[in-house]
Length: 343
Image (cartoon, rainbow, N blue to C red; front, top):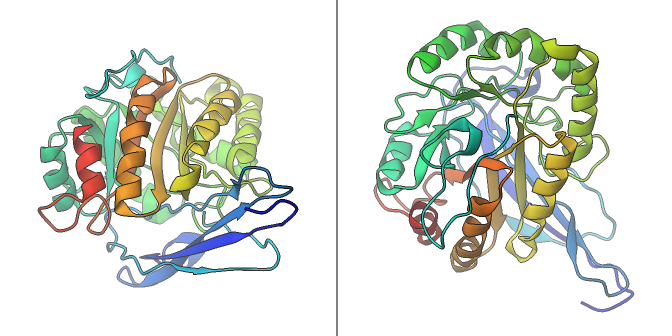
């Protein structure tokens, strides 16, 4: 890229999701569009890096499966970003292949799967010998087999809270080792909560499970906008500390999306999140670069050993088990899906 030029590269990925967030609660089979914007800028000839990365987080698996539409790239003259976008780790350094144990969570492997379609998840899990756990943005697994299921309280609305206690009781009975708090409250397109509100809601709904399972802080995006991403997490931790011991969390839950060219920023995000979390372990529960299948496969070959070796990272799951992503059909893994399953 040319020095003294401002280059803005925006890739917009449109994703369909159930129209349940933000109070738009229509019939369960309706969908609402979801967008993620990548903005990459270079100034004065410096190396390009994402000023903000897109992110895609989903409603629970109990809702209709989301379908993906093609991404269309465009250029803009000004940066206008809209992002839709703890227990200590005992992980040991990994070898060039294979997976380490899931740190303080005690999984057989720290690698996991996120899914909406449980049949696809079960198929993928059968091929992923290095996967130890899974989740689906919901509090019920829908029939996940062979993996430790982690229930999620997507937000604090009755649609989710009314069945949360019963589903958590079942998950704990089945051996669930952790419970996830709200899904991206830093994101207006997801749980959409202020840090103060989210801390109080976390106390109400998650604290009763302290000591029964590891409790995650609300998940965050890697947005660079004010009061999103890591900045939101810092504020949430501060609000949680004001509430004292009743606001309990064992690890912080983070998401990351960007172009494959800037894949190294994943580790910057993990480090910043670890610091914001007060040194508690990190779970990377959504991550995916954009690029060709070959480029993503090559990136995963390099990234997975680093994730396995990262001492404060207790668990990670690639986004996601779905056709057109980690799978090409109901029975076949994609090229990078095969890497994720076998590396």
